[in-house]
Length: 236
Image (cartoon, rainbow, N blue to C red; front, side, top):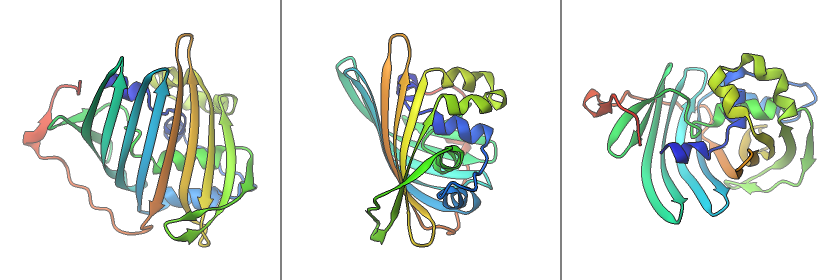
């Protein structure tokens, strides 16, 4: 499980933890803010590859970012050293506590899980200094306008003082995060495509993801996992 998590994107997640400013010239800023100011449903697929190894997460969830409520159900597919496995995973967040469901047990998470992504993506879109207009696509039956941006490791430098030591360590190696955000006629961000590049002295990881957002403003109800199903250990 630790290997699975280590291949997942870090850029947007770290930005969500430290916050970001809204640039008046950023055409997606208003739509990005809506991802954290109201309830939203999201579906996603994320794939990370490093040489012959790969990890894929696919699922859906609901989030009320301002109320610190989130849940997601997903499937993780991992191929490492020629061996493959697939697992059903669940995530819940209530207040400052987040649980992950793995192999029939719930575990308390010390770091936010990347699947709860609307807040992370909102911060990324708002913090990117330069965004350009590109062709739109149909998303969930809606016409959209596309906006593309690139967030680099250099752009993150102004946020480093706000990071915890563990997050700062995770940030090491992030080279770039290229995204295309698709905005509907209501100004809502309804899809974001991302490609992240993370490198180290011995590893190069490319992460691609697509997230769609819908059901803006619909109430999100999250319940705590049953006490009998919560383990004091760590998922392995």
